[in-house]
Image 1 (cartoon, rainbow, N blue to C red):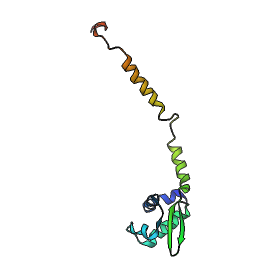
Image 2 (spheres, one colour):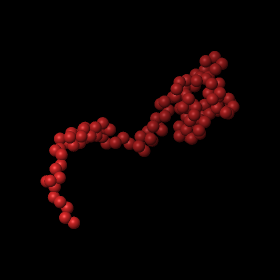
Image 3 (spheres, rainbow, N blue to C red):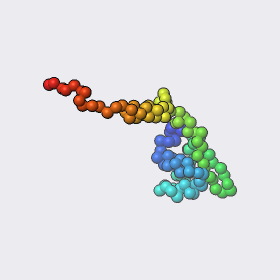
Image 4 (tube, one colour):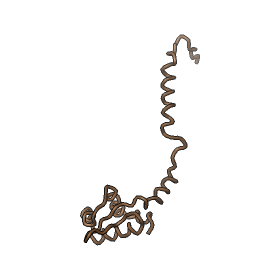
Length: 119
């Protein structure tokens, strides 16, 4: 299974969000979902096959952790779909400052020097 197929299921996405906060045991992950522990284990197995999680056996318990490198294909696609602007966001900060200086430096307009509108 690839990362995109693994992310298609809302339960698997929720499991990944939980694992993003740190490693967790299967029993703890199952307690947070209204599905059985075997169903959660199956979702975790698919996430591991997709390279999105890593599993470590500690005695009789299995601990799962998020494998962030497995998200590279998804991240790459998102980067292609939403490219960064051709200039950094801070580049416009200087323009904003210059506009503010220009407005402050401009002398106030005098109505007696303006032409009257003859309509």
